[in-house]
Image 1 (cartoon, one colour):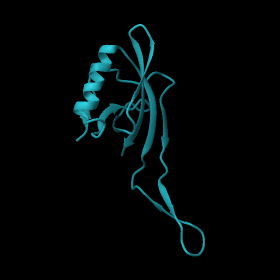
Image 2 (cartoon, helix red, strand yellow; image 1 turned 90 degrees about the vertical axis):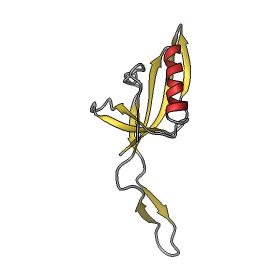
Image 3 (cartoon, one colour; image 1 turned 135 degrees about the vertical axis):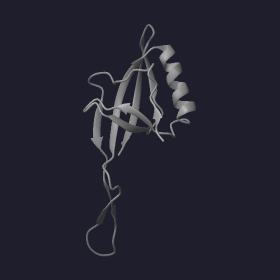
Image 4 (tube, one colour; image 1 turned 180 degrees about the vertical axis):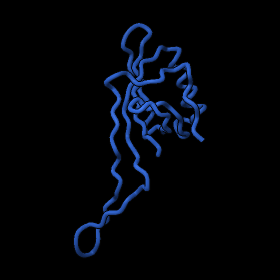
Length: 117
């Protein structure tokens, strides 16, 4: 069951930082004779997501509790609003998020996620 994204954290990515791209839906296999064979890996389309959220140090502490404890270090999925159509989607972490200090008490948190169909 997907976890609920904390309401005390930003609910949307910074404008212009969110990108979404379909993942490769097939794999290729070599055969003895002829061209490679292709087959689907998924029955539903999966999408890769990259985006950035701006957080304070206090919000990063909340996020780290969510990531390491609630989501078991990124293993569990979570629900978050999709900025394209404003529907709630299920996401999973692909990599551990990274932080960049941008000044004062502001940090950019960079995400590499996947939308789960």
